[in-house]
Length: 186
Length: 314
Image 1 (cartoon, rainbow over the protein chains, first blue to last red):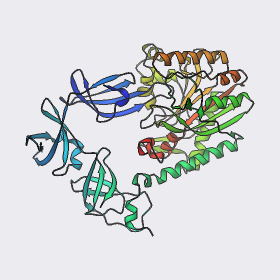
Image 2 (image 1 turned 180 degrees about the vertical axis):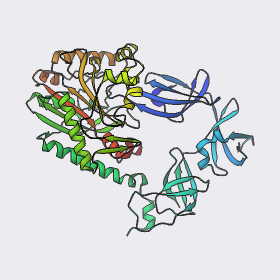
Image 3 (image 1 turned 90 degrees about the horizontal axis):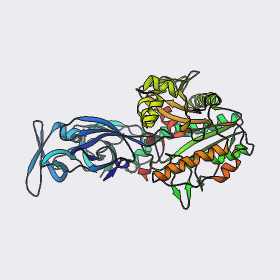
Image 4 (image 1 turned 120 degrees about the vertical axis):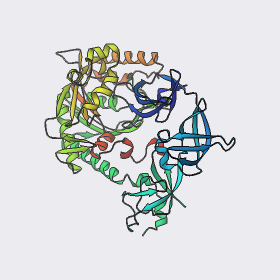
């Protein structure tokens, strides 16, 4: 059982028997008023979305979903193929189901695939992924303390802001939840 | 000269906050200058207290058998009752369960009180303070926050809660109170529209929503309370302070009853405060969220950007 204070982006809950995922979440509270939890929810079966505001007394059941560790194999047209390394069972997710995960989806990466009645619905990346910088402007030496960032392109083609000293070919660690640079990896 | 290797070890999240932390420090400095220049006495009161003011929806962290303050209000009013005319404080406050883009469970509050003043006087002082702090931080005339340009020229908009509901809500204040959805309407429908072109004072709340505020003499259904909004964000809350101990005790007991029925922690009645409340002269007081004002001047979307560490960073 979840309560409203457990709500956050990515949480999956059951409403009227269907699995829903919280796609946007914001805690709001008028200064003297009660805590409110504003959510945008997406039906994981139909894709339909709606907005709802919950109070702290509201409670939810977790969605009946199965999470399986699978390995990313390849992309074929607009389908992404994943395999269960124990059973060699393969499943396909659409571009839409993959969503932002494609930004950090490396070949052979082990991910969690979410299944509802054996149908793949969604993907969860590891929180941290180490990834190679494919393209970067050279480092302007001397700029060691400013909070400046520069854009680089990752091996997946995704553009990300990093500190100025990061150069092409280096490996960096990215937080897949925020999509932000964390640190350089040796 | 630092080696390139040494650089990579630095906490990048912190390095990126340099400009925001400088802005924050300059703003707090400017707040002090503003109040000192107006003969306010800066004071400090204990942050760990035996009895926070019981309010329906504000939860204190326990700290031993006492609590961390949710606001310095009670001690500051005891100072007013003892004859201090103008006092201000910049301090940490704690509220359990409050975490979001605009909320930290531990945050910084600027609170000030003035004798022989009411909430209208504080609106004017608020205008002066924020214009001064903005100016001292290199921002003159207007602020750009996200997609809004907020004009700081005087006077700022004053909008009663009733007018705001008429303008932005699908129902009236009375209907919202009857249906028990006042908070939802303020938070989701009304608030986000306020202070977008110039700061807005939202004033005259239903008296049931002004726990420590005085009712209007000409309309006892309304509390002399305002909130300041900028860019849809609630920045400050002010009252013409209630100084009727009997009425205050009644409101505290009502909140305590609500808290008990809702399964929340019951706070003891702050007796030393109530004992001196009748001798507190007519005064007005206001609390302003320092972190949020830094967010707005720094054009930051989340409160996380304007503090060095959030609880999640620890």
